[in-house]
Length: 414
Ligand SMILES: Cc1cc2nc3c(=O)[nH]c(=O)nc-3n(C[C@H](O)[C@H](O)[C@H](O)COP(=O)(O)OP(=O)(O)OC[C@H]3O[C@@H](n4cnc5c(N)ncnc54)[C@H](O)[C@@H]3O)c2cc1C
Image (cartoon, rainbow, N blue to C red):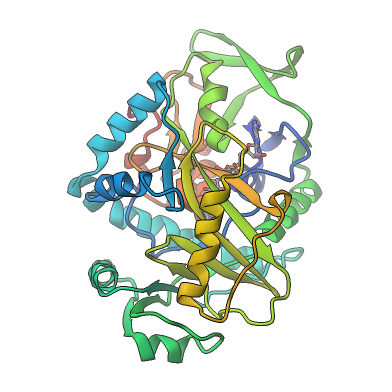
């Protein structure tokens, strides 16, 4: 069977990898040269510790407070748009204890599976992407945040995950790479990280050598359908490709692509920024989240990546300098010796996290089209969950029992 995957982020390329391994004839269709998208400049964290979905009680009140601070880590560009309003309504409805309770064990299993699969990639010839299973630190400046994170650590224990609450001197003893100024932190030993750009480019090369057809400079502009089946993909407005089965893995652009099929998908882009310091003199040993600032810091090989902010921006590529300043100014508050300079704006990477209203991805077969499967909407965890999603997609297409329960990921749930 011929499978066409629309777009080539971590989710699309990992799906291509596992589908090819299962013997499918795979083509990846991409609009440019396969070197951009959210999967490249992200913080590279592989996170079993992130078992809480984005939609959780208390998130809305915090989000509203952040909206009034130009340097805060969250912003929604106000606009009168039906899709945004529908998304916000469903987000509001999803911020419940029940959503969190149901999602936690599934996100734990999903991320754990992905970590294992990253480990397998790291041992595969042709892959050397600075994968390290060293754990992750959450650093807290104030006692209230530390208390809240300690409660999360308690939940982690209930789920069988490792989590250690540390006071200021314990956390400094662990993080011997750099001086800290914090109240304390929580260490999650089960997390890992990698150099995302390296993983992506090595995966592309491996796919090429494994006879996956990588079509670049092809923009999907439409479809031909009949009787609940997609027969052709139209690219660049006039070229038609015959298809047996389609995987939609277009990240934040998935809703736009599906609109041309007459399908509504609730998705908003969570724009974020990162800068990468090459060979800095000092850097932390551990990938870390500066909790109050919501900034991620990852040592990647010899480099250090600093990223943050979530702006619902309607796919605007504009770099918001105030928010970037907010990210950079937060760093020395936690690491007094580290003062990242404001880079030229063209050196700042931005990516759009594909955010669903309930913080859970869309994975599974379409109910509307018999030969369409979804693999999108991973928000802040698409890098982490890329390999496990690829594995699930190959299992779904082979009609096997998925390794992780996908009930909550039903694509047409809103
Ligand atoms: C600052 C930041 C830090 C992050 N850190 C982490 C992390 O540590 N761990 C983690 O798990 N996740 C992290 N994420 C989230 C993660 O990067 C995403 O969830 C993931 O990359 C989504 O992958 P994807 O394959 O679904 O989409 P994408 O990688 O966005 O792929 C979609 C495809 O669409 C293509 N495309 C690009 N531009 C256009 C366009 N104009 N029109 C149409 N198509 C286009 C892209 O090239 C790409 O091939 C972070 C995100 C940001 C912004």
